Image (cartoon, rainbow, N blue to C red; front, side, top):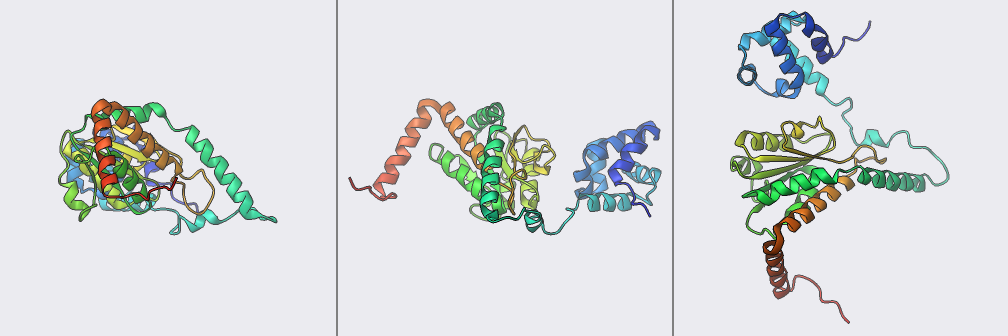
Length: 288
């Protein structure tokens, strides 16, 4: 038996033959399939400007018993093909007398190529948004937590009172409710995407804050509706774990550009921070 086409393929193929109103609903679902799997039918209808019953009629028009069955199919289609996204990457490496040397060489070459494809213009645009923001929130979870902490640390060196790590001082949901218009929210992530990162992006979008996504794909769920997308390559590098090299380079470039835009004021605050660190002997003195 041949496998049934993906629900999105079925939907897109059927749209031209649907009644005009169902075509509009179908296009909305096709363009927002992630929302279709996570939001209620009533919420979707409100955003789409449609009658909730139209989603049921759409599902039946393309061969499903109702919206719940179509939604379940969309959810299943979005599920990763394997439950081991990291160990699966380790398969298929070529053998030889020194396979680890081959891996290291290939990885370094891929990392350098990936860095060369990062867009300086996109980072500059996002830096302007950070410079003009009243408060900056930075969200990164699981492996991306280290990138978020790095960006948080560097920005706080010259913006000590207006930068905060989401979930840094308590449950992240408390911070999500504090996003406001005029703030900037930086969300960092790559596949497989963490749920808190997507929730952070959605909270930023709902609050009217400027959303900056540092992500591996244009289709990343935290990049949906983003004002600025800073894309880096995560999967192109060999190895069992996707690469964070690009994300770190983006974060550090973003901090450096934001500092430059801060001018004399940013320089003065950085000097004050450095003086405080020296007074509290935070660094080991180097012997002459």
